[in-house]
Image (cartoon, rainbow, N blue to C red; front, side):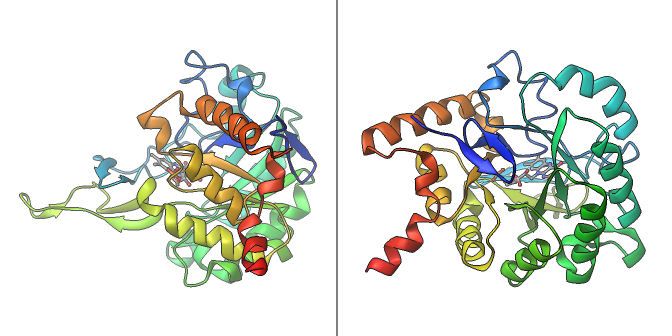
Length: 307
Ligand SMILES: Cc1cc2nc3c(=O)[nH]c(=O)nc-3n(C[C@H](O)[C@H](O)[C@H](O)COP(=O)(O)O)c2cc1C
């Protein structure tokens, strides 16, 4: 069955890829299944300098999901380029580098570096990180900062540019349109929802960082709505993410308007989930006699018009 999808100039053999930060650099999973089966490989966020991340505890299970405050722990660009990239470049044909920075200059630096490497096929900008020059407000919740980052990176980076938006805003369609107008080729919707958990015994927040990001099935209905709303607001492809733990959950995102999807928290529950999902999506198309997965994108909107 035809699971192929197009994101800008990239043709993905299927629409399933890992969500950044939940799949390491792929190396941890390569003995569990052949990563060539994936539509693309998205790596953990890389920053210019190494980061130790936030103080532990950094993850905690909540009803229908989890909360994390990893704090973008990563070995930094130089280590990634020298030690990791050579090991992962052949794991999948489409390697997507997710980057973040504390300043526009850091995003620009990483975009310039990424442009030099043919094995990196696309950039995904993680804008849910603090802008140090503005007292730590996340770039992705500051419309002007978002526009500035996307347009600055766009000037430097000529390959596929994906912007991953934060849901922690009043109206995500405003941010989606701004990213599109600033030159994004596709959007990933969404990063984690801001939240916290308090331990009633110790009477203190459970996370070392006090607050963190909520993910997993708990956030799926909000994520689906954001994809649905953005599908009407922009004309670039959307990559849906948030609580995908079954074929049905993935289908909701396609019907809402996603061209491709990412799997995050479910990788911790079932490391072999993505190949199973790819297989089940193929079976679904066959059973429903649908000629290609791309036919499903946004179908919930068309159904609405017909009522
Ligand atoms: C432990 C953990 C680490 C994450 N790290 C990153 C990261 O480094 N960069 C990023 O863009 N998103 C990161 N995310 C967010 C996920 O990529 C994804 O957007 C979010 O978890 C929602 O998807 P899910 O409900 O399928 O987990 C992380 C999520 C989790 C749970």
